[in-house]
Length: 567
Image (cartoon, rainbow, N blue to C red; front, top):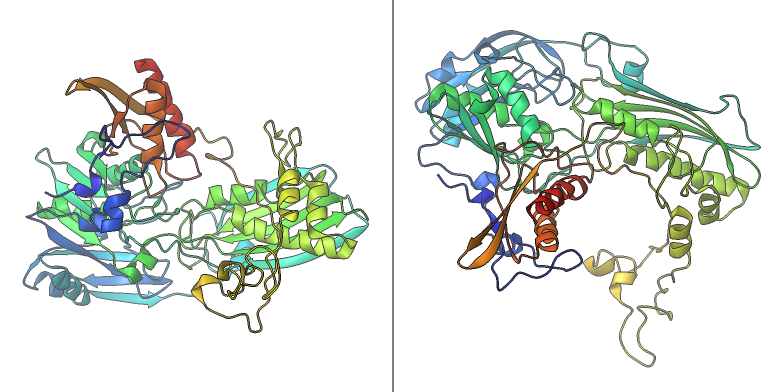
């Protein structure tokens, strides 16, 4: 079996340089540049067959019948599975198990998995999908998140269509300011669109278990959900990280994991699944669309008195991380500003739109678009420069957040605003300044500093380059007091007469450079140049998700502690 996408990352003595503060070459960089790095979609087993997924064409419908006989009869097909073939729980989910492995009674979004096929060739598997007959009774879909938040329309899940309501209250709810600006803002759905599509290879084990090689962001969370669906003990479901071609939150939820394992265990053969681009859009969560209504009260000098907000996040058909995203949008919803009075209500809701979950920013981004638009409106109303109105309200060390949390570390919001305000602006075409041609020269200004840039999308006709200002607030590590930890093992030995260190964690490298920084930490702590980072897998304790900008801090901290113990 080829699993080179999970290969170790090793320094040779000749190329190893320094610890923290140095700038070593990425260990995976040359292979990626040359096209030699094995991503999960490159995984291969000599005896493998291919899996494919039948998906619903309707956003909301009742399944009245499924007939797989036509697919089973196709030569080259090894298995056809429906919800009746899920041996364990036919429910999974990161925060709550509300999503079926395979839909059996109702589909709640267009693209929901209904059946699986394993065949000896990917084209055969795809042809078999067309031979599965599914009878649907189409139902009224819920597509408006604001209506869902208000309780209008069909109820999609027990308990109603509100996944979570997060209220934040501080100070006097009746406080008013001399200046009031209101606005309603909409943020559309966005996709992470990572270049490497979802992919995995499931290999049945001699012990009745399964080994899964997969591109993911959180090996142990995947393992927990796969174990429940397969009805196997944890030790019989072993996960190893495949090469990841980008993530940005879209790989926190399951895609091929359970499906590939089901097919492998049913057929007794290794099963590979790879999504194409269209299926990738169906197969992972997206950024939550949002409707945000804000009301900012301030005095005549632009100092905030009260911020009110009503935020609705469209979580789509299943919960995923909607609850946590709503928590971020609410608790960070007034931005990096001191506000004595806060009234915020954020609701994450179910609809029949595509499921939404983690994407870079995780709720803080949607809120930032709205509150920063409000700060611009407030600046205009008060006759202030947009930088100045932000500077006057900036959080600083010692400030209190709307939740009561005290900022107990440096928060140089005002200083950063002043620095960017004082930076020189780009030159006008033909003018003097940075990027302008040398006096007496025949050259043109540096195109990177002019409209259109190096992409040459415009030569400046009808285009004006301006400078805007915005400040965002985002948590590092998990939020709302979530228990955040990681696990690491560091081993030191002598190889070929030289000291060599080995690092083993379940922390996922998705392209952000984690492998590089873990080796730097070990070099710093042990003074050893030769450092190997083993493939991430579930043979060691959890490292948590590669999300929330946390792995350098948390897994880096675990590696540092382990290296210190070795020292």
